[in-house]
Image 1 (cartoon, helix red, strand yellow):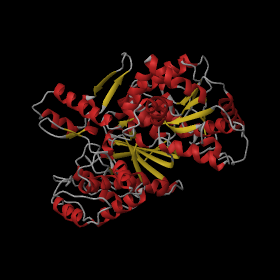
Image 2 (tube, rainbow, N blue to C red; image 1 turned 60 degrees about the vertical axis):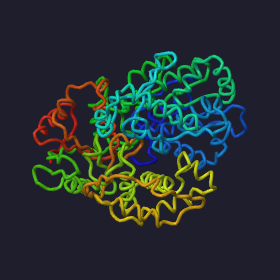
Image 3 (cartoon, rainbow, N blue to C red; image 1 turned 120 degrees about the vertical axis):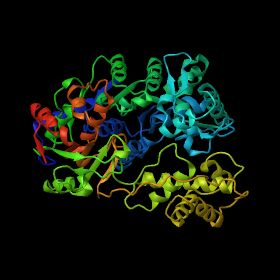
Length: 582
């Protein structure tokens, strides 16, 4: 491995690429390989602004709060807190659309609020033969229509919701009417999600009167808008950005089309490439990988569109081979076995990682589906209130869970308690807290302690939850009414999961993450055939695998069906990728 301060020709070339991307005038598209230092480039570009107060600012837009917080921290750490304040903006795309293209035209009363999801509040779809929460129904936007088309994405329903709809005596058309009526009533109360923000932003920009109100302040405030992870832009997002570009707002997009893994919400690699071609005739690529070894860069190239050459490993010269682990996969629960030895697959990977001086805490296990993974069960977005509460109780009692999961668990508990304490008040915990002057830390402490007080979930858990709710010290203003707000039904009790000592998560939750060692689980038959013959430009699964292996710094391992191991060995060997079959 080269030293941290050693300037090699490879490092000099990668730094030159970064400097060129920092200096390129807008509009521009910057294709960036995994580990290219996108956040470094974006914040470096921002940090070059002079310290004097500017009339115009820059907007840095990401798709996650994690990326947003990284950019804010770097500005402050560098002593440039001025760059996170107006006229600048650092935030998610949802919040940008909301603040500048939607909220200015919303009525001030009721106070307009942007929700992360309809799951943040109680929003039941009623007046049909069963009650289903609004957040169970994903929606789509078709920007090719004018005004944009909007529909329920029936093909994207989770299994449990689909079963309920199929058993209903009401038609899909009747359900769709009730879904949109329910959504409209909540929007009239001031609530919107990112979906509504996109729909309204698109409508406003296409409406001459609304655009005449919104665009002048936007063009006056920002000299440039930078969009990180641009490959995650949906068709609606790109349509909005196109209208902003047409209006004269300078755009700089940074992303990697090969990492487009959100097709379910309309993000397609070819759409970004077409948009980028119209944005600027030239690109300023970042092909230096500051994260992964040359072997991992070579492995990733076998999963990339057009058989393009591997990216250049900048700071590593490791020759650690790709590990292939023949496996026998359990149907669920993560109790997978290493086929040759019969031992736990994860114990085997842990021992192998140790051979290469990689500790378990520095390893990551990932897969396409949660059901394939070991570790605690994840909450499904369409589970009942009692099952969500069971998930939350399990989460706060599980060592090593993420801060994000803990925050989600407390929100679930707060929503359940508020439904009992304030049965006549609409909205989520944030609005009810504001109405009663309840500090967020007080609500979170009460919710966290309540979860810890509950016994472990079981099939007859409901009555125990009810007794605990009645006995729990209420917050100010509480006015319970009998059993209103009681979570009904039988909770789904998670099967006991395997503990590995390693971090686990699905690939879709790993954007921006990395680890010294990564194990990708491929439990499905035909995976190697797909790898060998599929086209990543049109096959999102291949792009998901690409994202997975590029999270690795030093060690990449793939567990697959025992009978497919030889085929993958041949495929990688033919591509000159060092392989070790264990």
